[in-house]
Image 1 (cartoon, rainbow, N blue to C red):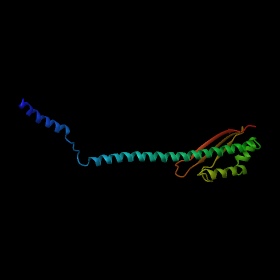
Image 2: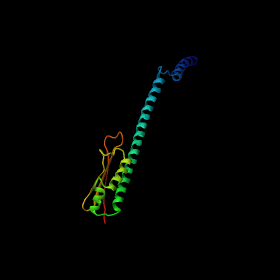
Image 3: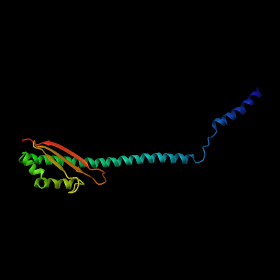
Image 4: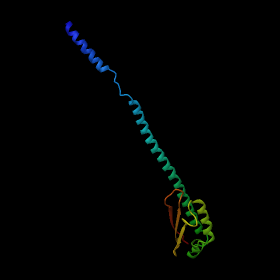
Length: 157
């Protein structure tokens, strides 16, 4: 019985050491893991910043679209005031030298970016049935192409 206990004890110690042996990590592995975590975090942060920049740009574009819609509605409202015959509408708004058109054009140029005498001029088409097509264009600094709003309206009697 003594002999059996002696053989069992060294085997028990060897198993105990194997199970409870501290695991040694290769030197520098914590640094590598930290750098990897920092890289993943940085990529996520850059993506978030790009998303924020796009949201701010679209917010500005939405504001300009809203302004263009208000300017178009203002012009149509002015067309409803006064004589609404096809000839009168052509005289008041179809002629680029008409005083009502010039006053409205000044508001457009002061409100929308990129509307100048040389570029992005509004277009107003009035047919014999008093169907009005108004096209507004504007181009904010940094935009590759101008934005466009087209409004159709019928000025009835």
